[in-house]
Amino acid sequence: MDPILIVLRIVHIVGGVFWAGAILFVVHFLEPAVRDTGPEGAKIMRALQKRRYLEVIPAVAALTLLSGFALYWRIFGRIHPGPGASGTEIALGLGGLVSLVAFVIGVTLLRPSALRIGTLGAELAEAPDERKAALQEEIGRLRLRMRRSGRGVAILLSVAILTMAVGRYL
Ligand code: HEM
Image 1 (cartoon, rainbow, N blue to C red):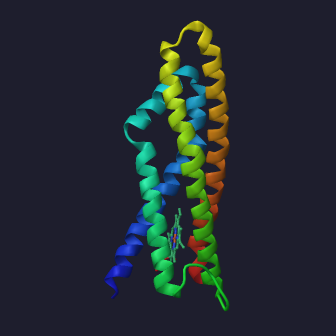
Image 2 (cartoon, rainbow, N blue to C red; image 1 turned 90 degrees about the vertical axis):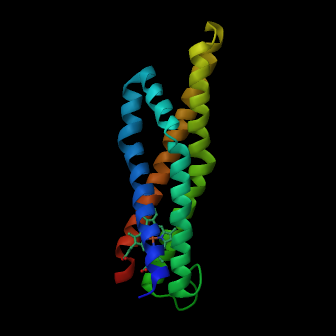
Image 3 (cartoon, rainbow, N blue to C red; image 1 turned 120 degrees about the vertical axis):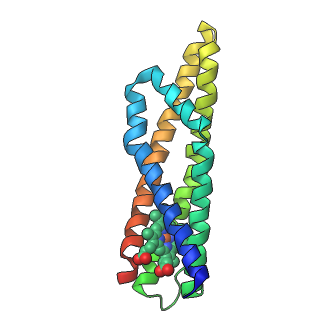
């Protein structure tokens, strides 16, 4: 028994389930539901932010990545596939790469857009009439960016889930 491997696997799998599950739920169910509810939906997003969704998910994602690369290193002795790589090594390496890209999109596009929407939404409630149209336009633009980047992250994480699910049998 290798206790370090077991701890890494627990952190990795629990983190991966949490990260991917939370993103897939938001992209496929929560965001469309919030959009359907119109201006009321902004309150749900603010409540979600108050519960630190935008801090917890990146932290869990980072743990999943770190434990994933540590597992990869322990098993294959390198952090990405190289000469003579087996099917398993290539599949897990591909999963690692797409997860890393998903993380970068999440922290550079998705999270900042969501944070800015929260700030502008609060400003909108207090804004004078002449400023409202400009704020609404900016919020609409950010929502579109959030939706597109969210879909990109969801697709990449779905690829990661598939490669992780079958990797060891290739
Ligand atoms: C959301 C992203 C991820 C999810 C949901 C995920 C999920 C999983 C799951 C469920 C397993 C267990 C598979 C099995 O035992 O057959 C696994 C194994 C593994 N994952 Fe990931 N993973 C993710 C990201 C990553 C990343 C970024 C890396 C980095 C290279 C990585 C590397 C590995 C490795 C090396 C294993 C094999 C561990 C072993 O056999 O002990 N994973 N992953």
